[in-house]
Length: 298
Image (cartoon, helix red, strand yellow):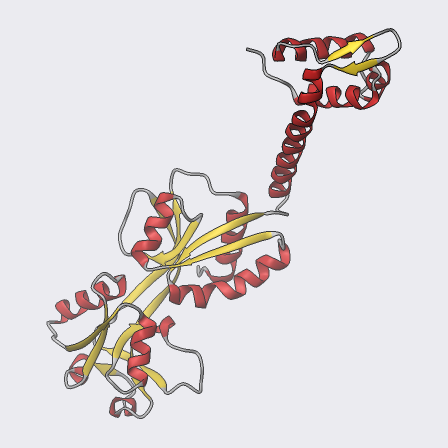
């Protein structure tokens, strides 16, 4: 079965509005016989006459009157679709969805978003601030264009581009006894209550692995779901926490401070995660380029 061409819809609308095949032919730069053949083809596809004609006048049949508003909607939808594609191709419109671990979202994204919005003000940005495992799944499923995540494992579905290394530090109150030290070792922490995040967290996995390698047992007294909660408990004087440096508040007025870990270095590697066998949208590619230019280290 033949398909209706959008040019035929435009011609049909023009003939219907003008009531004159000759005038419509001049407007669309076709000969009148060529225009007539196009309308005959459209009528054949629809299986019904659309026009009644005399030597002086052309008017719509009942079927033609019913088809006219539908033709206008079809043509309008097509034109809007083409306009949307053109806007996306010229980076005037679109959306970028980023799955980002919360600490990295605060650290990496604000400056990049500001620069991106200045260059491409019509492209919207959606941030999924989720855990490392959730973020990885979002990228693999296609719910996010890309992710900013930890390099916690190798997955064939994704590729990883390094941004920076984020060392773990000991988070304490400024008035805590350990704050008098330049750095803090595992043995220094043994008398104190430790605040940890859930075992489902990639950060917890790194910490537990370091403790096993160092043959150390700490007093894991509190367990929370989010790093921000552990910071609140430390600030209340309920314990200490071993957390990524990026999770530390940048506010100088905070009661919290941190010290480097002595003896065993723990770090998480943070980078851009992309699907390996799926092309990325032009808008997302632009965002990644700005991100890498701003943060990637040689």
